[in-house]
Each structure stands twice: as structure tokens, then as C-alpha cells.
Amino acid sequence: MARPGVCVVGTMHMDFIVYVDRLPRPGETVIGRGFEMQPGGKGANQAVAAARLGARSFLVSRVGGDYVGKLLLENAARNGVDVSHVREDPESHSGVALIMVDARGENVIAVAPGVDERVSPADVESALPAIRSSSAVVAQLEIPVETALRARNQL
Image 1 (tube, helix red, strand yellow):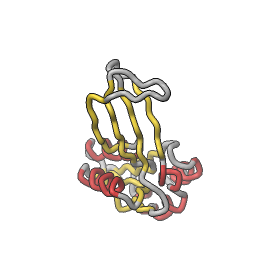
Image 2 (tube, rainbow, N blue to C red):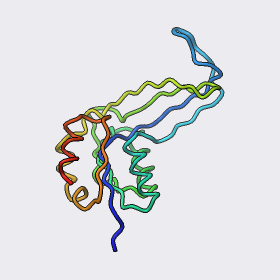
Image 3 (tube, one colour):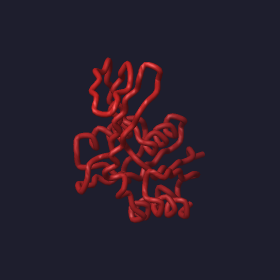
Image 4 (spheres, rainbow, N blue to C red):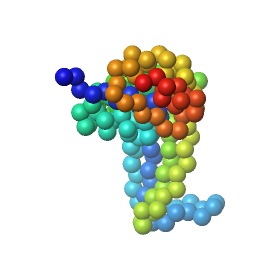
């Protein structure tokens, strides 16, 4: 019996995380006590989780034609996600999140979505074989609503 498939239509981001004792006030600079760069984005996280649970996992998304995009693709593929439906889009940058986390675990996040806003119904159409071979389609609303709706209506 074939493994169940999950097709995720969503985002890929790189998270840049700085750990601080306290969050800065407007106009203030604080010194960080640690830094991490972690691949993320709700769509990529969902696709990686499905692959780790044993599903055939497909991701429909976009990355910019930049170094961050290459890292995001490599990470997803290394974690068992089929990234053949992720488009490299030179018109904008890959999605990034800037995150500051204080000593209590409180955070502030700023997201620059870049190509996330360009994931389109046409991207869904080009991934129809993956979608139709899947048992479930997952989408979130970090992409245009019409794209999420197109994905939902294909299963």
C-alpha cells in the first residue's frame, strides 16, 4: 500500500532569531546574547512535519532567487519534502522573519513576506498531479486567499 500523501500550499521563511535579556523600547538598541537562523514558514513546517511522520509530502510555494531561497529548498528536501513544485521567483526576495525573544520567552516578530504574496492559483494548477495523488491538502492564510481556495477545491 502506498504511503498517504500530504500536499501543503504555503510559505517558506527563514527565521532570524536574536535572544535578548529584554525587548528594546522604540528607538533603543539592545545587545543580543545569542542568535539562530532557522528555516521555517508555516507551510514548510507543515510539510516537514508530514514527511517526518512518514507521509509523502509535497510543497507548493515560492522562494526568491536568493541565497536564503536556496537554503530553504535544501532544508525541505533534506527533510523528505518534494520541492519540485516550489518556484524560484526572481521578482522578490524569499520570506524572512526577524524575531527577538526575551529572557521570559516573550517575543516580537516582523515578517517580510516577499514572494509569499505571489504564490498563485497558477502555482496550484501546475501542481495538480501532486495534489490529486494526496490524501490531504493543507493551506494557511499567509498566502493569497484565492490561492488557498484553489488548493482546497482541487482535492
